[in-house]
Length: 123
Image (tube, rainbow, N blue to C red; front, top):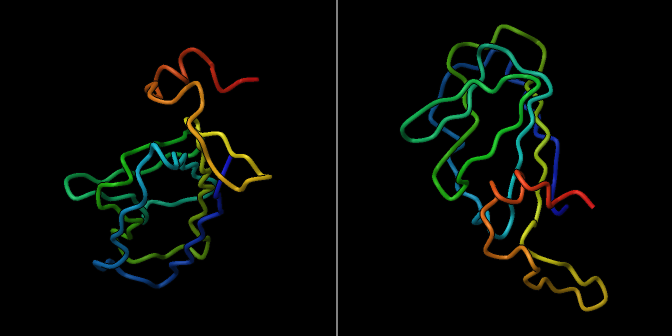
């Protein structure tokens, strides 16, 4: 596990806008798992071509090198914030804390679907 966070948006009273577009590092450097903890109908995750309503109880992965953003699609009436846990993983890299470097591990080059389907992440 690497850089992870709780993403919190208190959008009460906010209306749709065009802010927040960004790209992240390639998934081969940091694979992000996005898990909604609390949300409402006003919030979506948006890419250039599609929008997604993230459902509670599910986890999401996407190509974070493509422009994306958390977005508001209508005026936010709820006072409850949108809260997602974003877990950053490095399934293809090994960290050496003595040298403070990452090196390729035995899973380097394997597709994430193979790592998940074969439960290679379980020690």
